[in-house]
Amino acid sequence: MKVFKFGGASVRHADAVRNICHIIEQYPDETLVVVVSAMGKTTNALERLLALAHRGEALDPEWHALVEYHAQIVEDLFGEPREDLLDPWWKSLKERCAQAPSLPFNQAYDAIVSHGELISTHIIAAYLERREVSVAWSDAREYVHTDGVFRDGTVDWEETERNWKSLASDTSRRIIMTQGFIGSSPEGHPTTLGREGSDFSAAIIAACLDAESVTIWKDVPGILNADPKRFNETVQFDSLSYQEAAEMSYYGASVIHPKTIKPLATHRIPLYVRSFEDMSLPGTVIGDVEDISLPATYIVKDNQALIRFGLKEFTFVNEENLSRIFQVVDKLRIRIRMMQNSAISFSICIDNREDQVRSLLRELQSQFFISVHQSASLLTIKNYQEEDILRMKEGKEVLLEQKTERNFQMVYR
Image (cartoon, rainbow, N blue to C red):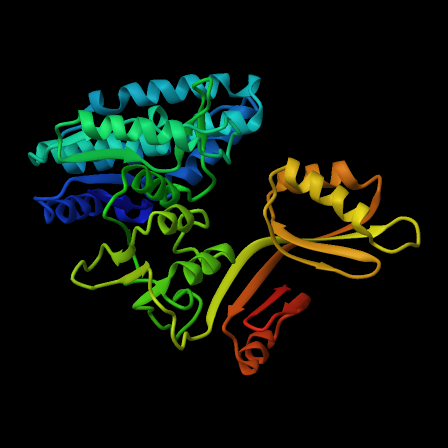
């Protein structure tokens, strides 16, 4: 059994859907689990819809645009409107939006935003059936169980493995079509695994089923040492070790979700990153390989917040102060991307999520002087040379920097 994962760009319109179905059809003798994200920028659209719903405001024009976008894809694929295909999902989404004002924001988020993956996979499974491909649509909420923390659920591995093994043994279909990103709480509420969590979903399923491999189909030929949208010259990796790939994802490389590598490495399952635009290209394989003479890797994270904590009394930052900050960071489930300690201050760089920044300030402003630099960017250079650092600093206001033997990081504006 192999696991394929297709992201939003690979299913953004009808021709893209036809293309991934063509890819699937090239593996007629394989049993596949196909994990699919929401179509195009649907997750962003659902987040805007959520904001309106949670405030109790009118949903149009966001609602109309969302429905029309998917309706056009359906009509292009089937040659007719097929309202029956999506009407139940629109009804479900409307009900979730109506409930949103009475729910905590994160719970409402998971209930609403999870519809993107449910809708996309329903369309694609129906289109595969039309092409006479043996496919079973499966609701990931029934099979991926989490601890119930909304927007960042922790997987209940024992229950999830039992569920997936049961499904795989029961189905007679060659293809299992399911959703990335989503699961459910012990109470049965929808949960999500963190933004861009579909890669992690594929790894979860592969680990549970001891799959032969995982392939993530992307709009790039493989894993590159830099984002080609930002850098004119890039180098493709033919292979990477689990450790190097894990470090790259930890620092924010967008090709792979940070949680993806661990379950695959534990089960020694190779991960392939390949192009859905040209499947003849070999891509990049991540596995039990030795990293030799790696080029510098550049990773840029925009929309970051640099937060500095200073003591209100003229004393030094000590373990007690740091413990208090880390307790709050952990409680709010904030991911620290860079941190630095000095005698009288402590700085962290985090994703600039307004709700988290606001909550962090509320919890700690009585104990610390706090300054916040928002709209910052974080650059990480792995395997750097000194000339790489000098070149990347040109024309930038550096707010914070640090360097180890292999890695350099700076927060800048």
